[in-house]
Image (cartoon, rainbow, N blue to C red; front, side, top):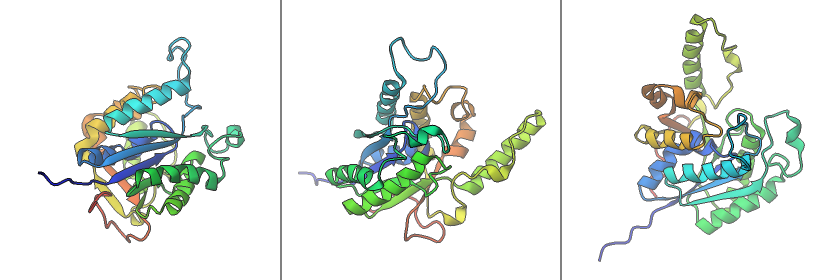
Length: 269
């Protein structure tokens, strides 16, 4: 008889449909390919996403479409279970929708954390991914993912928590190059100091090379057709540029660092 190998469980927590493939699609597919169980939890169904007139089929609503897209993307990324916490999309920071009852932003952290913790306990989660304390770029639902995820991990006893983020230094370098190209064409990208995406490299503790999984990552993005069109930044760039931009996923783990100390969030499990 062969030896039974028990693999680990990764629970990856996101604010809206499509966030999962952009932020963690590589580590999700990597974990699945290595035999780990991958569970996707989404706080909202992305009710406030925008689509062009005529995009949805007659009688189809955006919420149902985004749920279906999430399941399609999840299959591409090797996800075994998809759960929605049941909150509604809060919209961008400062919008009146932020304060609508039932939104994720207005949800008591303890209440939402208990919902997530229940899943963590059911799954005996070994690893949880959330977002950094600014939610990557300041979206209220993303900030709430950080708060709720941190508390849920405490409630469930999940000690290995990674805050998905971006390397701000890399982002600014890429955007500067894009801005230079745009300027040559007479366009304006705006001041670079406003690009407060992610965290500085000095604050990051994990760098995961997911270049081997970018085909799946991009296919998962394409599955979210209501939000990510073929003309979008994500899908229109040449493949080599996509690998450069999305072939590395960055995280912060409390207690690690300073500097990069990990290159695989599932290492040793």
